[in-house]
Amino acid sequence: MVDLLLDHSRLLLNNVTGYINFSHDCIVNGLPLCLPPENIVIEVLEGDLPSVELIEAIKDLHSKGYQIALDDFVPSEEWNAVIPFVSIIKIDIKQYSLLDSHLFIQAHSHLNIQFVAEKIEHEHQYLQALNAGFDLFQGYYLAMPEMFEKHILDEYYPIRYSQIYDELNHKALSSARYYELPNTIAANEALQNPQHQFIAFTDKPSSVSNK
Image 1 (cartoon, rainbow, N blue to C red):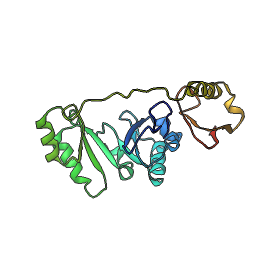
Image 2: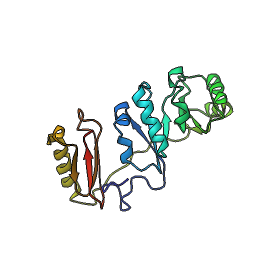
Image 3: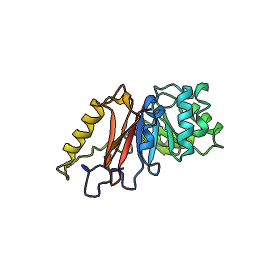
């Protein structure tokens, strides 16, 4: 994944796994496929319901080597069809008890799933979550969030980005299926929301699909 505004390496993720939130529509429309599967985790948002379309999209992403995470997960029967295709389950210990979490982890120990305890704010919570069977831990007790700063290294980047953005917003997208975009990778979240876009500059010509 490339972003010319980040640093001299021009890498957004440099051997670090990135967790990226994708909405229901993003996943169903295949937006994660624009990113390489090697070092990203696709997070399914807690407010999304497991529609038939979402379940099929998750299965497809799993078959293509993508890691899927369920964020702020609260176990329920409607998610049972999804669990075999996820790699990570994140549980907010303030929303779901450590005892219930332990029972859920035990019941799914035969699956290759990493369980993440969220909202760890004190040492005793960390120790309790560790004893409950969690593999990974997230919270202020362990680290505070850090903000990334961007510095413009390519003076033409904003101009090129603006041109592509205008192209995607003003073309009559319903009149054709594919649009050639030289030296870019671009994808819309949905035609109804053209302002939500991923754009990266590469050495190969690309296209945007109107499906």
